[in-house]
Amino acid sequence: MNTQSWLGRLLYGATHFEDNEEYLAFQFRFLCVLMSAGAVATLVFVLAAATGDNPMDPTHLRMMSVFSVLVLALWAWLRGHKHRFKAAAWLYLALCMVEFSSALVHVSADELRVLWFFLNIPGAYLLLGSRVGLTVTALTVVGLGLGNAHLARPYSPNAMMTAMVVLVYLGLFFHAYSSRSVSYFKRMRHSNERLATLASRDPLTQLLNARAYYQWCDHWLLGAARSGASCTVLFVDLDHFKRINDERGHAAGDEVLKAVATTLSEALRRSDVLGRIGGEEFSIFLPDTEPQQGAEVAEKLRQAIEQLSLSFDGRALRVTASVGVAGAQAGRSSMSAIQQQADQAMYLAKAGGRNRVSMLPLDASLSPT
Image (tube, rainbow, N blue to C red):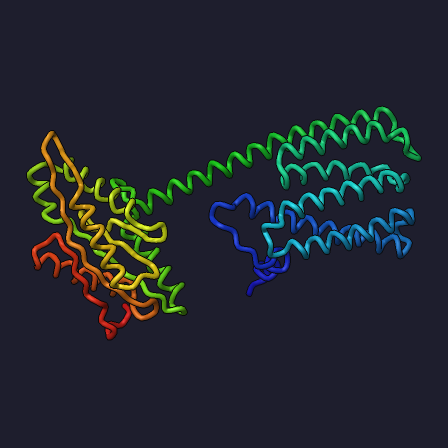
């Protein structure tokens, strides 16, 4: 393990983010770094006060010690748990406001203590969004304006005016920045989703293409290898499809393919996976399904295709399909081996007269490829 990965695991824990959680990943990691760095920096001030290098009001010194402990505990609570991010962000923001207010009241000798409020505003925008950022900016401006007169050493009117203007400017700056950042991430995510769809879907039927279909099936077989769950594959091949293309044209063939794809999709369970793996060839993966159950599903699908009422250019189109069925247990065969058996079963259906279902159990001696 290299230094970077070790440091990342230390700061963030074992946290996995989905492809569409890019911005959440940034916010989560930013908060982890912010909390750990903030706690360490505060402890440095505490140690400096303890050694006499940076004398400090005892009340605020206790506040800083409590702040460090609470932030470290909050960081430990957040590590590895992305679903806790929003709650952790709110708690950290509240702790910071209390800590900075304590410094403003109790550390009157430090004229620059007001800068902590400036640093708080970017964090509010980046962690919790524009609405919270604007609210924190407004509360900070109002709080400083009303509270300045009650400080042991109030800031001069010129200093307060400068602080107010800079706070407002900083708030508006990060409002524009955070809004554009969120917009960018949303557009990037939408573009990635569109690209993923284009890469995994057949453009005509909108079913999974062969690559995406087999990838999903292999993933399921790998995940179910320990349990040895049963699965069944159906290979659906439309009968005499070339004749439709030759006699009625490719436009008619396309309408047939789309109608069959819709029919198959509507007849399957949500857990089943359907893909177009060739010109007029469809493959269906039935998880947790015994071969005999799969054969019953195949017969229902065959009947649904046969009962389709299609016409093109005012002329009826009759469509039938031959279906091959093959079953297996996860871990005993690869998807390519199961598909090969289903393919052989489909050819038996063709040889038997078409428009029928044939089942050919997977040979247990066939090793995964």
